[in-house]
Image (cartoon, rainbow, N blue to C red; front, side, top):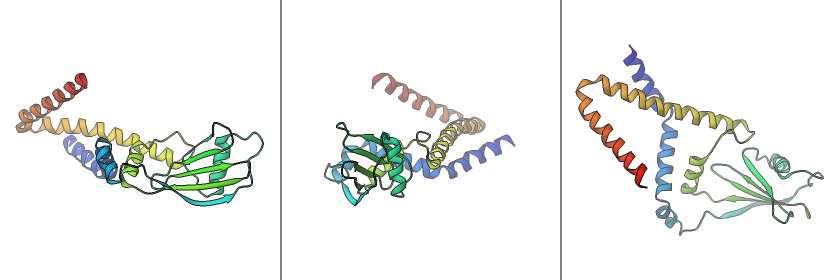
Length: 197
């Protein structure tokens, strides 16, 4: 009974988290071979193109960059994960809207109330790296919190796959010798890299 339950957990977790595991696998290939994939695009980072320019009413006196950034994003209907900061000379506010598919860079110049919205041209390589590095719980939006929670569950699922895999290996007596060999080889290679790189 326990064996059947563990096999079902192993299988259904794999089916549920398949998109995440595929994304992490593909993004890791892209990051591990960054030079190769960069050369496909001529070695240049994904360019930005102006999406729109407009006048924005302006910031309240003493308003900090983060609060102003939130208000500007709401004004543009671009709510979501973002970072905002003032330029070193204090004459501009830079807002980065962290969208996995279409990130946007917004620059606001309070002196003339000019707002410039740029979007980054889509590239599969950059998209996969953004998804791999995407974090949850750092922003106030619900989607980021749900993403973070889902990634926590994916981490728990990976640990369960290891444990249920060990259980299934040990349960099948005829696989114990080959399984022990596979485990020993993997652990040895991991330890080799741990102490040599």
